[in-house]
Length: 158
Image 1 (cartoon, rainbow, N blue to C red):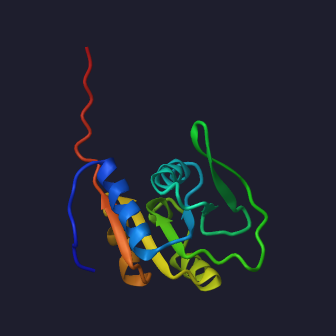
Image 2 (cartoon, rainbow, N blue to C red):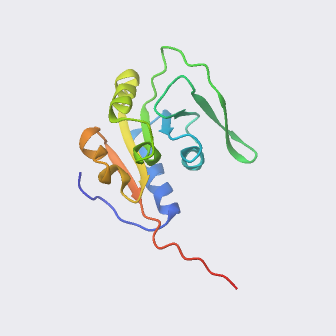
Image 3 (tube, rainbow, N blue to C red):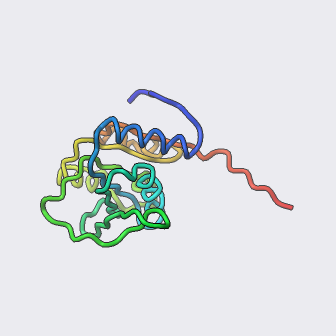
């Protein structure tokens, strides 16, 4: 993959995601990431593209715990969604937590998910180049990776 843009900050990440969802014309999105840590980032990205009504979260590349993401008075929330065999989102967004060394999710698990749902587009959203470090960019047919850096982290005290 080649670099097509460079920017700074979380708002830039969200702007790029919103642009790609618009460019691809996505009407339904499935985010898949690690339990706990990736869900808040999926909710944040869902808010950025809140005009897309059909948004879901699948922990650990599994469809058996699928949640529907809903817009509410406090932003985005989620509730269980009973999956059916016709579940075919336009876009799959893989969150970087899946590729972290402590994750039990394998490349095979992710490629099985891709084969099962056959999305039109596969987008990766990660921090600190985790997809590249773990070679997922070589083993998953990403259409786009949005990679953000959180360095340096500065802490101030009294």
